[in-house]
Length: 350
Image 1: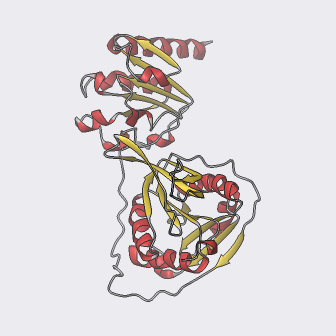
Image 2 (image 1 turned 45 degrees about the vertical axis):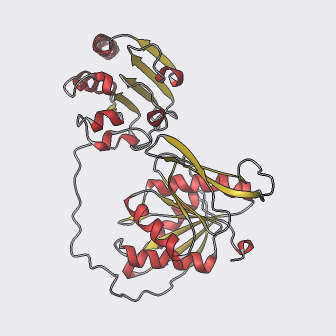
């Protein structure tokens, strides 16, 4: 393998039902940073059926070029045709870096494709950088430059590992939604559009989709919330989350929780914040009864304002909080809710 042949930072632009998934825009934003460090371009790979019209939106979010693989076999996601399509793009165009969202689709597609193109894959990354590997020079061992340094939780989230793929290309990673930030769209931006179709011949690995049933969830997507009132084990019981729900209702926010709450069966996994849950960036994040373990903080530390309420004045959450209140949440939260409600009613009546 001649590594010099591989250029540019590629992003799998996931789309479902003709709509680009948010993670694709997030990855394009990060790809621009990585490409700038390398002096290379950002390329989006768009697979689907009748999807060429989506290329302009990818350009507005940072793509210099869009490779479109458009075929009837790609109308609905299936592992075999999508893996064939993306692997063919990699073999033909030779990207230096290939980024895939760690969604249900990406977690299936990424490993399959990496195996086909004979490269490594670092899964569920929370940070990407360009740098030297090994990180610290080792006597007698070559230190390679301009490598993709892929950081992810390891050992059940108890430590953080930085991984590189110095001897194979592309360097592949799946990235958690909500971790990277999309850029402000550049209105009217255009990208070079390349049509590419490797040909699709159904075989015994092509499944047949008989029916698509769309599930309706009764939980909100906390990643889109501007205000989150998050509770931990310190809340005490599932019934006691009512006081957090009251606060969230007054503020027009949503309730979320820590892993301990999910493990206890108090709240569904969809509401979990942290390394093994969702990464959130609300304007205001209330951490109530949450100790502040590194696994939780990794999922919310980019919030604009963090307000912590905890009876333990030494809780680690206060190290990352902008405002902290030490005391009994059972008294503080209802009082806070009452005062906010009164203030809002007074303004409405003025």
